[in-house]
Image (tube, rainbow, N blue to C red; front, side, top):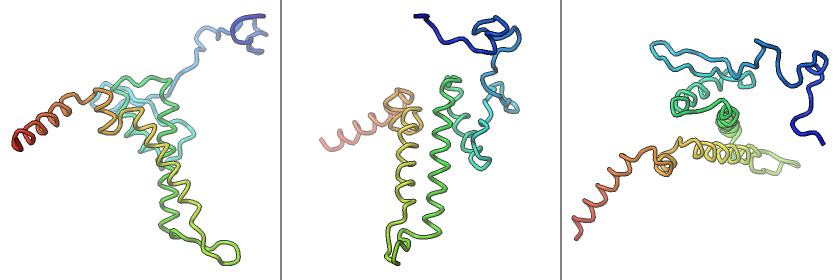
Length: 162
């Protein structure tokens, strides 16, 4: 049995195997350069709605300087879409209320409540993975000074009790 990934048919015709033609390497992401800053940030992917693009910009600006790689961008896209869908579900609930009219006029819980809950859970799970919450940063060791200052204040409080 052959090892490796199967040959690409178009590349097989030109007899280059799985290698692209010289100068045709795949570009990972389109980037944006911030004014006055030397960090080049990836633009929002094509699948993200325009109204969700600011969420992408904030997340990327926070995460990219920490060493975010191109392989992580799909997880960031999922984080952004979870935040966007949560906002959509919340807006629907605010417009129509917690209870809506079901079959035979019987009030039922708004189905968007489940979507709101699920998207919030997805967002929080991904935010924890990226260290976007205080507790995650403390766990990841990114805020050692904050942890030390909390510990210092707790020690002072305990010393005052003894």
